[in-house]
Image 1 (spheres, rainbow, N blue to C red):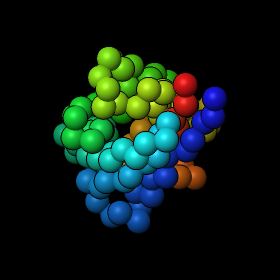
Image 2: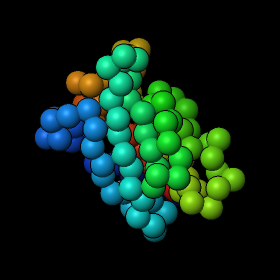
Image 3: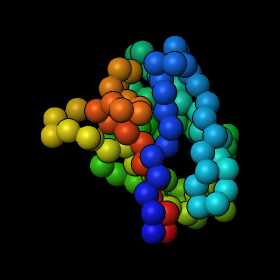
Image 4: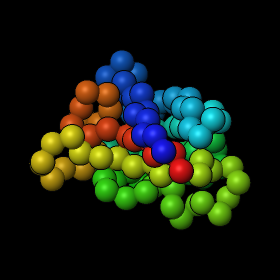
Length: 106
């Protein structure tokens, strides 16, 4: 079992919509991140197969979709790097930020 940090550099992207390719459990997946100004939260699409996963901390974001063959078999979650109780926002989510996205291989 290993844990991988998904490389998100939101500031370099400069917008509330961007895509990254992530290697999870030996397969490449396209992850699309969409910022909702109305809800003030991030949403995630995985390979255009699963859309609209609200990114919250402390849970396996993929758990409801593990029955699908097109979803990585491990756990994907947003985790706090500090003791503060905060949600993933536009300025605190990504590499070297308060909240990071981690993948735990099965």
